Length: 37
Image (cartoon, rainbow, N blue to C red; front, side, top):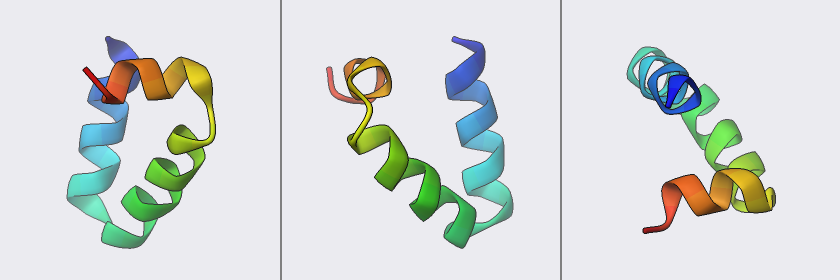
């Protein structure tokens, strides 16, 4: 769950960083499982 908190903080601080993380997460099965219910 720590990963989700870090992503939330980064997204809150920078839309660009959030977009990059989301794109990376979308291509990573581990994070995809966390983001997609």
